[in-house]
Image (cartoon, rainbow, N blue to C red; front, side, top):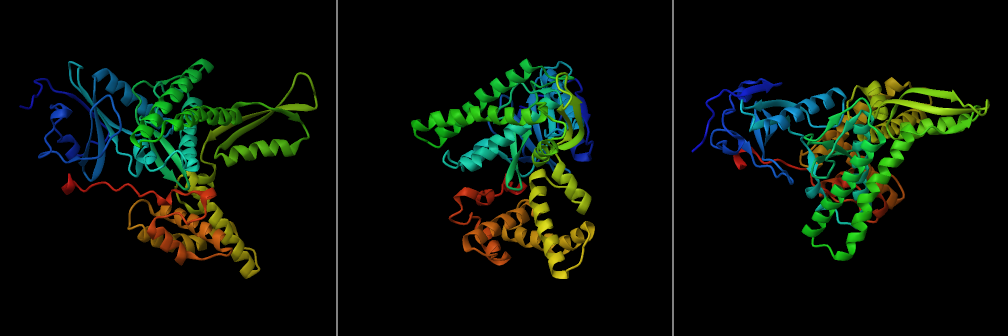
Length: 425
């Protein structure tokens, strides 16, 4: 029998739509009836708490059952991370009972995302390039959190979702139960988070290796992979916060450091060439960054498109190549705005449509176009000339990376996650 509380729950919803308001908030999440609520059967990774998914008002939502104090804390932390524009799932509401022993946290479902198990079960330890992109994404996520004063406290593969972004991955935080926000993190807090991350990532990788029945001699390599996330983090942190001393007239070295930050996607807010106490001919480079959206902001200014940083890098390269061809063919100057307009009409729009169709209409059309460009480049490298779109579309439809391109592994051979229809659950 379903138990209901005689006391009215405290309902806080950021999306007070009719179907959301009509959900059985008086009833414990574990007892929601699938015959009256549009529950979706979506696999979840390891979790300390019950997680269920529902469809309401044409959108998907993730609901997690946990004690009231934890639910309220996580809701507030996710709201804070949203304000800080950090890659974390977006809080949609929290429902608590007066006695505080049970609550439901509501978050937006992160579509087109991958759980680490589902991703790594398809990527054995030998595919180091693919796995390296996942570890890069983990390191970038923790750097982003730390530089905005967020101590995670439980950084792990299980608490992270991954989304394709061009030929890289972006990591998203999906569990903020232990997170804290400070004005600035101490080195000790950062080190504690890093130690937890290495231990948790190692545990997650060993878990996948056991499920894949990989031989025991792969364990040392797996532990090295977990430790590599710390090294990736430290390299990126040093790029942001080290203050190298260079000659005042050493413009090349100063420019090279700024380019490395831009290449990593960071938008420069301020560059301070501070005098040193010991040498009047030397300065200390101090850099302040505003965010990791350098290429996506460039593309947005030119085209109005809002895409991921990894996608923007690929699209900007395609746009610049198109601009160069326009100039060569017309033998006249074409400004950036005009070239961008022609590129969108002649390349991006028809190319993304054809690529999306080749993938059966699944996933994101912009990502499909990025995959098309990657496959075309790989095929052209093999052939020694530009093969054009048709062979690339055929390869994309087969969802296989072109052979002989081991040094340039792509994610196009991974099937796009397709959610079950309501009728299937």
